[in-house]
Length: 252
Length: 240
Image (cartoon, rainbow over all chains, first blue to last red; front, side, top):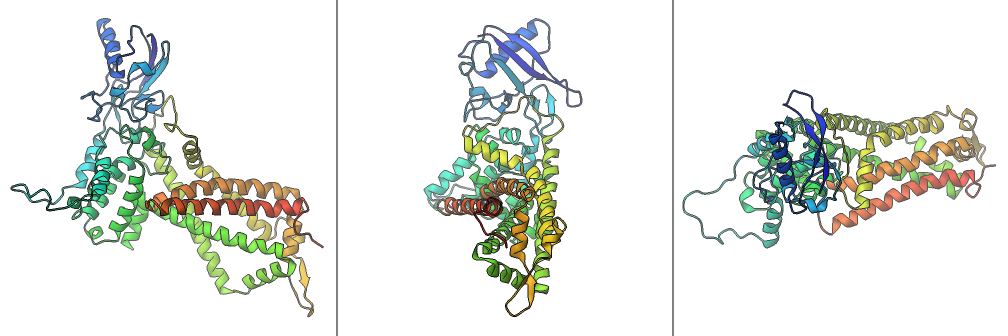
């Protein structure tokens, strides 16, 4: 396959960036999108040019490191798929592909396609701990968890924190991410003691990091590689309101 | 008070506040339409209804004050959210912008959401026109001072005649009908968003409540467009 790539190049956080066009030949349809970029980088390096910087780690769709906005959609055109799991067979020979970094005020570009997503870490940190006894493991069935609740908690827990929700949202809102993290514990007995404090602190930190508000575009759900539903945002809204009426609001 | 302040200042709280004020304004619009439909029960019904409202005295002013408060908070919150969202997006925009949605209804919903500030601004202009027209009587002063003489010889404000005269003028109809369609577009987003924002996730009640809201939006749009059109085209209540 022969491709025309338009890739965002930016030297560092403070320099202006621009789209640079590259012609890439010899792309196999079996390559993943990141392997295609590896091929480009090999060619750039061997001709003495600076390779394109992009984030990646596990390349198995579970670490949340890979990003990229491909032809206007975070993680590219395939539903429920991370960029690393997107294969070139979904593109045609001769295609033009626009590759841009995830964009948001809270996700500054570090270099080329790499953005700083540590704002997410700060939201997680704000969530704090769960109360649990240390020492020998308790008997497995001491705390019964209904199957449906456990399933819902796990649905929320599939969030890999990649930031596609923020990148896709016209408001750069992180509500789907925060909602998934909140719901993950709100559906389990272990998350109950700190439930109110957790949602108050995480929402407060989310606002502090400069993410936008939810306008119910639902672009986040459509772009999420783990297909986390926006229903969790509704749950978080309710949880937040309830927490604000609770005693926890006095300490947070 | 501290908590209320925190509610409005947080992202989720601001959304809850704008949803609640929107819902209350929507309730007003429904009641307003139900009142207007008195037109079809004749001159006497319409004018008595108007007279009852006028005779509420201080209660009428209280209602107007609450309405103004709701309207202004809805407006200020909407503008503040819009500004915050623009800021959150950052300076650099995407070169290629595409919706990740694959189905059409979702794309329409997203479009209505993106239009909220614009549709809201036009509705604001319309409300000002509407007040100048029927409340203050600046648009058609001649129709505003019509009176109805009752059998006992006393007179009262002829609202029925005023509305008929208003909508026999095509210019007014061309202002009202598009404004009502735009209001429908604004309410469409409201109807699909309010339950999400207020956190109703029940698998049975959420779809039911959504359908009820959709029906009410359709009722408001059809009803409010029907009144001016029926008068202009001559199949509704007639003057004289």
